[in-house]
Image (cartoon, rainbow over all chains, first blue to last red; front, top):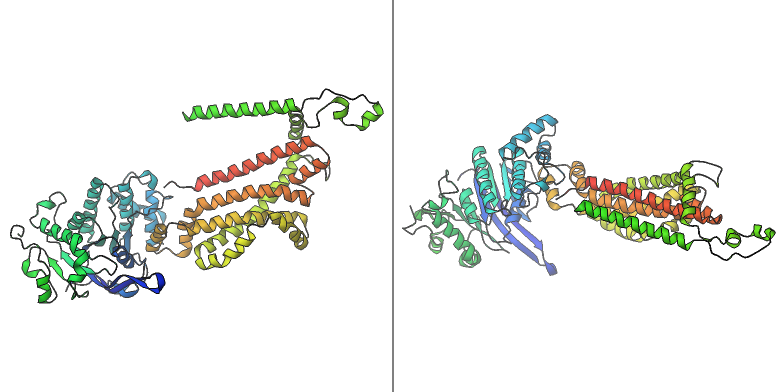
Amino acid sequence: MTDKFISIEGIAKRYPGSGGATTTIFENLWLSMARGEFACVIGHSGCGKTTVLNILAGLDAPSEGAVIVDGQAISGTSLDRAVIFQSHALLPWRTVLGNVAYAVSSKWRSWDRAKVKTHTQTFIDLVGLTGSEHKRPSELSGGMKQRVGIARALSITPKMMLMDEPFSALDALTRGTLQDEVRRICLQTGQTAFMITHDVDEAIYLADKIFLMTNGPGAMLAEVVENPLPRDRARTDLHRHPLYYALRNHIIDFLVTRSKTFVAEQPDHDPRNVPTVHIGKPGLTIASGSEEQQRQIRTPGTNPGLSA
Amino acid sequence: MTSSLRLRAGLVSIALLAAFLGIWYLATRSTASVATMSPEYAKLMGLTATQGKSAMPGPLDVGAKLWEHLKRPFYDNGPNDKGLGIQLAYSIARVGTGYLMAVLVAIPLGFLIGMSPLLSRALDPFIQVLKPISPLAWMPLALYTIKDSSISAIFVIFICSIWPMLLNTVFGVASVRKEWINVARTLEVGTIRRAFTVILPAAAPTILTGMRISIGIAWLVIVAAEMLVGGTGIGYFVWNEWNNLSITNVIIAILLIGIVGMLLDQILARFTRMVTFPE
């Protein structure tokens, strides 16, 4: 077992419903990530993805269970875990520089103005916003705003980044460029990242591990899909990789049908030992679980035409 | 296009003013009929009876009188004869003092209430009852407890301008976008710093709007309050000139009250623009 940099241990989220009943969004959710790993979560709306992310960020507290990051149970938010918000959440009365500097001066309170500015500038340059430092968010395009959000998250040199559909509001071209930037930065800095997305290709391009969640309420983590694509993959020739379609079809099949039927089909599903799916390696389809389960789970990528 | 629109609007405004002054002038012209009477009797009668002059002053009378006031705004010939500048200064000083006190109470209190759902609910019934009370209804109680008419007037201004500011501050603080608060939370920003760096700038436009409503109400109320307490101020001036039957001075006072009110509103509008941020 690799070191568990992040370990979500049996968390649940329940809301009081009408008439004294409680609605369970998810329960007994176990999930772990290694240091430097990029993980994407895919699932339909309402499966509690955002809640999981908020719990990881410390913005929300689980009804049960605990989250352990770097050997310590988390309580509340931390500068170690930076969040990139879907709506970029820039402070509109501050400039680009001001928004990033706010984060920097929050982390290093004793720094003087000049030091904060130099540090801030480094990260503005990193996301390619040199020259726009003194613009206000209202003067920026959606892509530039999200770049500021990324710069703000990176500037505090967090232990991990949490991203809640960061590119979903952007046009395809901008999204692609930002995906490249995020991937480059994460690989460069060895950043651990947890990202929610609806975009299958985004997950395939960025993630080392893809978490598939079933539909809520009562959502559960169904599978962990290991990304078989090489680490030096490029966005433009992703689809030429022999395992690309097997991986993509597996995820899409899950989203289209199995996310609904999974709970009924897999009564023995053990949330503590979620099966890991290795696309293209038939013998290793399921890393853990009984033989009976192995036969029930379809083994994707076994099509001879597709496996390498 | 905008400049030409502004030009045309300005021309229409001037035309409307000219029409108003013209109608006013025509309506207050001398009436033809003058009763013949003995000079002894005429001395007891007003100009309306002796010269057929209208009882209502015309624009020229008001203009002449206004010019006289503007030439000597700060003269002081004793308690019942002070320049308009002095009277207005008294009123503005009272409004300023009462309003400033209300700012000092309403904004910190509004912050507390807005940030605490408990306080918000606990204080709501009190605010709901106190808010609709006419500020002048407080006057007897203020006079009885404070025993100083001038301070009572300031208290009335305080009590009337506190509510819009308080309610707007509460609303502004309570409705700061969750995402901005979350940004501060993920950056481990402490409560005090969060209040000043996120909540205050985010709520400032709403707070300033409340302050702008308040200054308008305060200026409305000061005239009535000064009519009651007497002594000094533009409100007292209006009532004093009514007792003197100087309709000309009453009209001048009305005009000045309007202009000062507009200026106060414009000042607050400028402040509001300064803190408003585009999204």
